[in-house]
Amino acid sequence: MKKIILVILMFGVWNSISGQTLPELQDEHAALKSGLQKVVLFRDSLQSRLQELANRIDREKAESNPRRERIQGQMATALSLTREIEELNRQISEKRKQLNRLEQKLDALYAAKIDSLQKLVEQRILRLSEKRLALSPPLKSLGFNLHTLLTIRLETAKDSTERAIFADYLKNAQKDVEEHLRKIRQFRDELETIAILEEKARDFVDETEDHSDFGLMAQSISSSGGARAATSENFTEQMANRMEQQIHASLVLLNQLDFHGQLFPAENWASPLDSVQVVRSREDQIKLLRIAEKKLEEIHRIILQKSGGKKH
Image 1 (tube, rainbow, N blue to C red):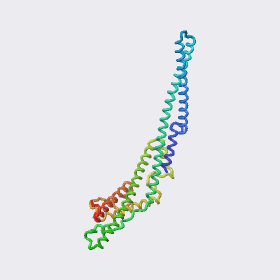
Image 2: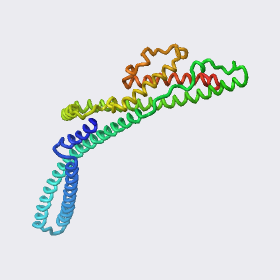
Image 3: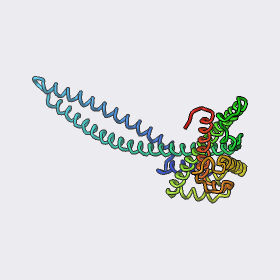
């Protein structure tokens, strides 16, 4: 909410930077451009008249008996036209400078508005991404026993029946692992997207607070009782609880994957896995999912190797 209010107020600040609103600046631009075109057309018409007059003067001078008084009158008119054209050229030059300055101002204003709209869209995406993630069903535990999986060897089966049982167990375990991998990767991708949007949100707040006007607005909004911070920590209580359930389920799964260090003896995960607090930050959440993903990928490779598929 704070971000949306801040962006809306920012529009007002940008609109009033020069004491004019955007529609007023656009109207001024249109009027100035139209006025410039009219002056240019008038100047061009005078230049045509001057050229015609110069041609007549040349023809008069070329006659066998030129009329001096007429030539002098034409030359006086030509001089007057020349001065008028010079004045129009000066006006045209000034109007073009004004138009250029106004276009630069409008360009900066449009750029600021586009950037603000992008920030607003990013905030909306962030809110929806957080809600979607919080409402996703928590990860389930593995549907097979990891210790049993590690002890299975098709080549040691006593007979074809036992071999079929082992093969079916491996097949079901493979499907289970692949489904967990799909969900964890989706969960991690969404968390990483949220993390990027949160970083942009923090940068946006920093940028606006660097500007005196924006800083005052940010302080005012922050001090209001109904205002909420612009990060994912400001879920509703229900969504926050759902997110903790997600993380707790990930921790339970990770505990299950790390079966007494048999599978990953070199993995050093010293943090207490039964504590949600240790993965409170977004970075810790992503790190947790990457570890779980790595472990599942290793289990998947072992299953393929045991079932005679692709090996290490």
